[in-house]
Structure formats: C-alpha cells, structure tokens
Length: 134
Image (cartoon, rainbow, N blue to C red; front, side, top):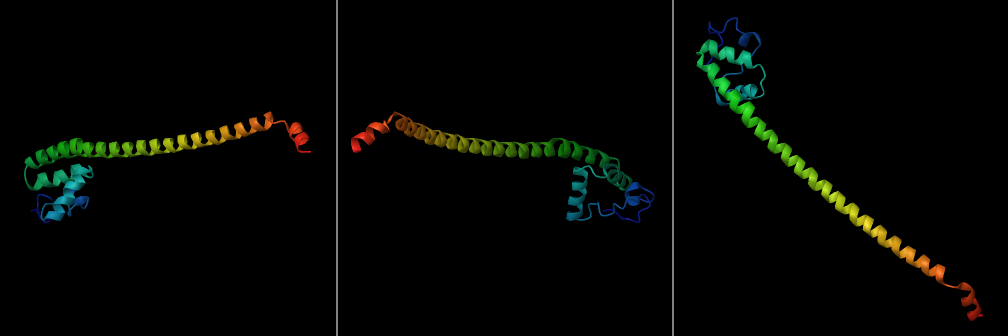
C-alpha cells in the first residue's frame, strides 16, 4: 500500500506529477497502474514512486512487465488485429472483383446480342423484302 504522506515519496516525481491514483491499494487502481505502464505513459515516474516506497525489486517487476506486456503481448495483439483487418479487406476486394467480372460478362453478352442483331440488320436486304411485300 502506498501512503501519500510517506516521507520516502516527498519530493519524488511520483507526487510532483500527480500520480497518486496509480497504486496497488485496490484492484481498479492496480489495473489502472498496469495500463499506464503498458502504454508507457509516465513509466519512469511510476516506477520511481514504487521503488521509493518498496525496494529495487519493484524496478525489476515493472521492467519484466514492460518486456512481456509491451514488447511481446501487445505486439502479438496488434499483429492479430492487423491480420484480421487485412484478411477482411482481401475478402471485400475479392467480392468487388467478382461483381465487376459478372457485370463485365453481362455487358459483353448484351453487346454480343446487339452485335448479332446489327449483323442481321446489315445482312437483311430491305429492298427485296419491300419488293416481295408490294
């Protein structure tokens, strides 16, 4: 437990920067403290406050937490999130490409039908048709 009136903390960066809420006095405060360390916010000040109150073992604890939490676990979480995002983007691109191919195929078929009817019109001899009809 950290006592804010502790003589070891007086004049430390921990109190000067107003980090009294970062402690392990209860579960929410402990989670907040570790989150602050995880995002490397005021890391040195937090560690110096705990070292002043406890021992140098606190520095080792926070260093190990930093190495495992920030450099390993956080990077793995970010890598999984990026991989999921890129996979979803590939699926969206693939779906859009398939729609485009279907639309192009449909347009080509319509153009082929138009070309066929224009060929029939070109080959049809209107003069003979009118002569027969009249």
